[in-house]
Length: 453
Image (tube, rainbow, N blue to C red; front, side):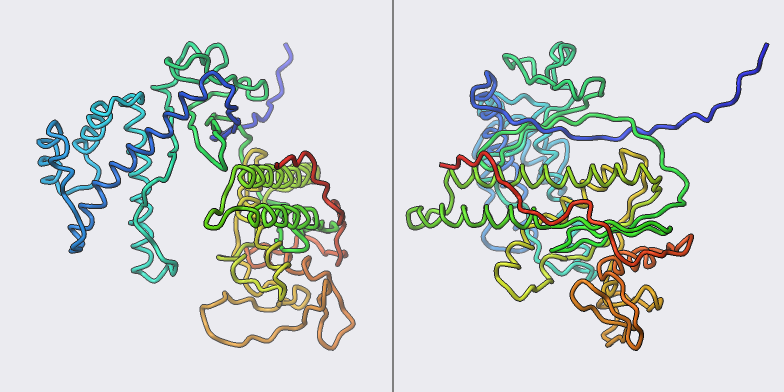
């Protein structure tokens, strides 16, 4: 009998992903989930009111009130127990909010109420973490305690709430829903964990969380790095002898310019004191969808290229407050640049890399555009030491020139190579290319289906 050859098994990891579906007003469960978001807002605000008043009391402020203790006689005893515990989120607090929901006769059940309190708990935890960072001088922005929701709040449906019978028939929803929401064929075979409803730009969206198997990360050999920018959206360099890639931001800038113009026109037609309307919300929604679609298209093409050449690691150059610190000496340029969602782009690139077994990391990129990769210039971290550093060259438009030499390199390509070097990765072979290829050349972006009136 012939012996079977040993084959290397490809290990797979499970990761969580989110799919989003728009809920139309004609859907049979639209009114129910809209009511859930309104009730969730009221529950969130009531729970937050209690936490805020006790926080003000502990902080020594005068403008606090404990009238909520006697507002509902059924809750007075529980409130006295809760206040004596001297903690924010305890089992007693959860019990109080669940009783409040039953007193108000909300359609949301106790498990969903607990999820709403969990959201509030996460918000307060974020506040305490930021406060700790600010006291340690690691965070400079202003921080505020969690505020009240205005109209709607997110509603989470965990596995205990989702109907198993509906899930077997490829529908997501609770047992009280008439129909639920059909899962598209694209997500067939995935293990759905939970779902949530959010309100954004005047529309309801159902987001589903599911598990997906992805290949395990490989041993790092081939590395790519990207330099993000306003005119050239992405400039990619490799640590081996292959010409880099440039992706133009002209389509995004054109899209931003168009929507900014339309929103400005619509805003000028509104009565005094009113800043938003359904038409403007519709424009914002269409802009967000088209931007997200365009960024996803770019990311898919880029990952396809990485898989073709066998990239093992992808380094993204990014600075804190990148959009706020730049000045393009033009109101139009600043407006178009600052409307590019770089954080969203980084998130998309990260999860696309994760799905394909490519390691992805962010790298602080200060001075990578000023330093020369060809001369191996030292690149410090901005703000650590207030010094004036001298570099071997300077930037002139899209070209980086070396002082005293007739050497030139594409400026953004030079920045991407420096980002790679700053992350601790050197070239594995000599690079002969100093310029990049355009896989998405500059062009005019066509905006379709804009019936905003």
